[in-house]
Image (cartoon, rainbow, N blue to C red; front, side, top):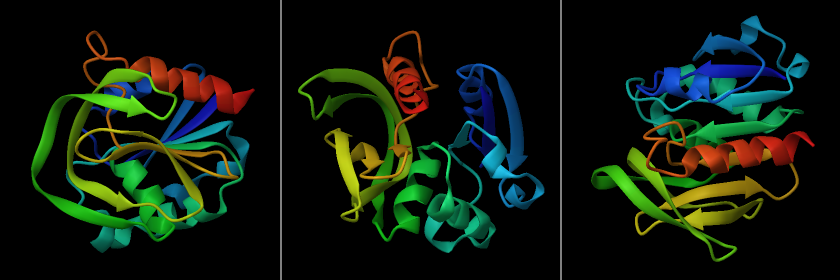
Length: 179
């Protein structure tokens, strides 16, 4: 599997790349133009802790364009999920305080799993093109596009993998979208 990973500056970036199998190509935020996204089997937009809010970041122009026109499966993690949602018109809301820690993700199939949240913004609502697949008490944490292979994980599947189930959900998504 060939994966393109857009590095938005997540403190968990190394752990995210470790969850991927096969050949991985990394580009920094704003450098998507240096690669042909159509040659990849999967694209990952990482979290981002140091590049400013999604709503006011001129570096994200290429990412917004990629999300809207991508033809291969794409998964956004935390900040990357915000990029997906915002590029389709979702409302993002700054939380009163940063949500950081283990939370229970309630999946729409009735299951509950433990995940790690680490974000200052939440997705307040999603446009009609998307389906919510899981929520915590704090936010929409897991969603997908109704027609395109676009997935958003507001949580960090790569964090605290020994005590959470985010990694398993992340790998299940990859397996299901690449079949």
